Image (cartoon, rainbow, N blue to C red):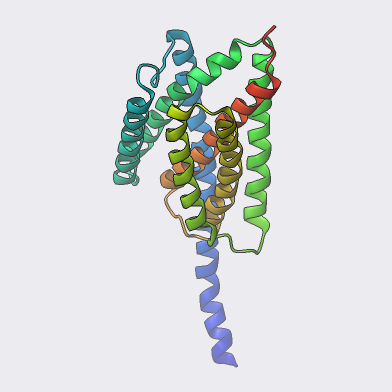
Length: 233
C-alpha cells in the first residue's frame, strides 16, 4: 500500500505540470486568436476600399488560386510554428483572409442595415464560440471521434462550393452556408478539446485551427443574415 501511495505522490507533480502546460497553451491560443482578428479587420477594410474581388474575373481559377495560397500559408505556418516567424505568417494569413472576406462585407455594408447585420454576425459567432468552447472544456464526453467525419464534411463543402460556381443554385448556396456553420461549430468542440486534453501542444497551430472555425462561422452567418435580413431600401 505504501508503494502505491509513493507512486501516486510521484505522479502528482507530473499531472500538475501537464495541466499547467495545457492551460498555458489554451491561454496563449486565445490571446493569439484575438490578435489575429486585427489583421482580418484591416484586410477587410482595405479590400472594401479598393474593391478587392479575387474571384471576379474567373471564379474557378480564383478558387484554385485561393486554395493554393491558403495551403501555402498552412505549410509555412506549420514549418515555422515554433518561432516568431510562425506568428508573423499566421497574422499575414489572417490579413489575406480579411481581403477575401471584403467582397461579402462590402455587399452587406451596401444594405441599409448592413452595419447592424455585421454586428449581429459577430455577436452570433461570439456566442457560438463561447458555448462550444465551454462544452469542450467542461464536458467529459470525448469528441475526438468527430475529426474524420468533420474533415469529410469540409471536403464536401469545398466540392459543393466549386460546383455551384457553374450551377449558380441559390438553394445549394444556402445549404452549404447552413452546413458550414454546423460543421465548423462542431470543429470548435473538437479543436478546443484537443488543446484541453493535450492533443495539441503548439499554440500557433491551435490558433490557426480555431481561427478557421471562427472565420467560417462568421462568413457563412453573415451571408445568411444578408440574404434573409438585408434591407436594400
